Length: 148
Image (cartoon, rainbow, N blue to C red; front, side, top):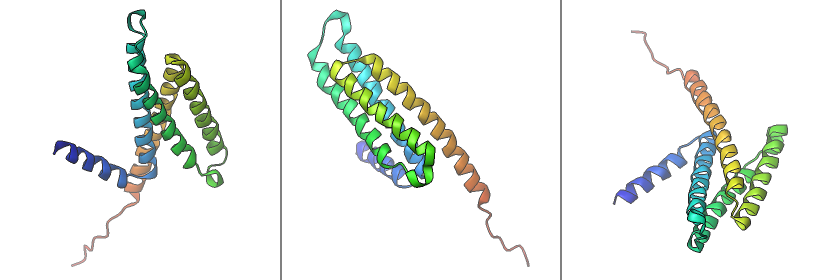
């Protein structure tokens, strides 16, 4: 029952989020998945022994992140985004390329680099989201009839 409550809360959070808040949610999940992959690779390499049971879940976490990055690519608005959209496209494409290579080679360092860059983007979009919400809130002026 608790799972249903959490699932319902997450669903409501996503369906009521602004576009900038959705980006933050996607970045959060990408960082979370890459943290999982990094932790699994730590376990994979523990004590100089390679633990093959860690490869499949690591790969799944990386692929989930690549799916998120692909969704970010698809969401880019090149007509209105101009140079920023093109730069993000190039960065996201690079992320997926690096993650593909890291997944094949079990390269924790490459995953860490991508994770840190996604985390930086997340921070930037979070700040933008907060500013946009504040601006929207300040534009809302309730109409109150104070004449008696």
